[in-house]
Length: 397
View 1 (tube, rainbow, N blue to C red):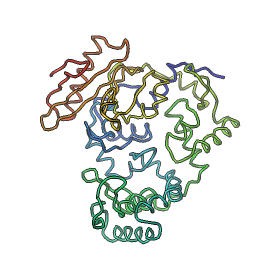
View 2 (cartoon, one colour):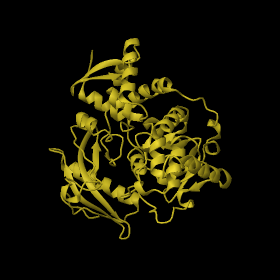
View 3 (cartoon, helix red, strand yellow):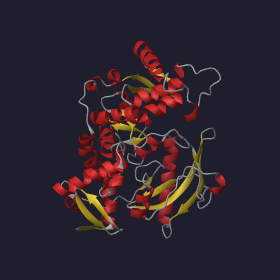
View 4 (cartoon, rainbow, N blue to C red):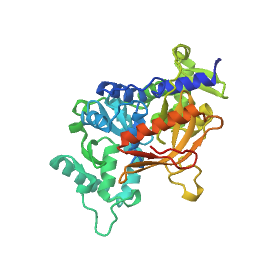
């Protein structure tokens, strides 16, 4: 069985996540599209302490990135689409054929849940028909274009109005698609009007989805367990992924490797060639948002980088160790620090409320490089000043 060192496993993972090369100083639409295709997806999240998560993820990989560049690609629905992996995400439009499997599975698995939350199974078909008809006749609509029943709250997952549940169900199941956003609200339209080239796409079944999803996940992870492979794109169970992997091991589509970090994992047969092409990761600092794919699987991050990370936004303030929206700092193939920022848009100041270096990681050179990286972040966010008088950092610029 092939032995994989910790450095090799980190290198494969960094390469698969678009973090093994220096950030280009100029971001073209074609380069941004290629970057998203390499990642596979970019998570979308509504928290905006600094900037939306998808913009921070891309800025960590493209020095000259601006949010308007992603907006232009999204407006060209032949390039990207929005749907669900483990969470809401922006994905390359080339993956839409595989998402027909996801649409069908959502229709089976989530109908009862959406029906219950919208007011009950008996009235759900009529609600779907009403929403579908309005969009067909009126064109793209926001959730806010639908009235909430009298006395019903209009915000929050558990208090969504019935029409919002219907819209989300029809989107998850592929009858609707996201035609754009307005102040981050989704604008829903009929799928075939947003993606006419995929209107009559062949429906992918479970086996075809797994034939694509498992190798595609391994290209981005390097090595992984069946559980990790199931969770990468989502849509299948760990048992389904495990069954596919067992068959793939027997016929040579996958191999087992032994990790220096401990344990046996799966890899593509060409892993030796991929390791031979690895380059030393660049020394530039990258500021990773909490939803960066490098951090998504916390156990994997700790195993490969020795970096224990917890997202603390939903933890009571008194119990937080590092802060509300903590960004880890990557240099080369090491996670060297973490900091808790807050953007004061009114005062045009980026506050660094705390900073914690990993043991032995702090050096004068790294402190200086981090100060420069924070200035760049502030500039990109439109802030005129960085105030770093929080715990672990003295910086005003």
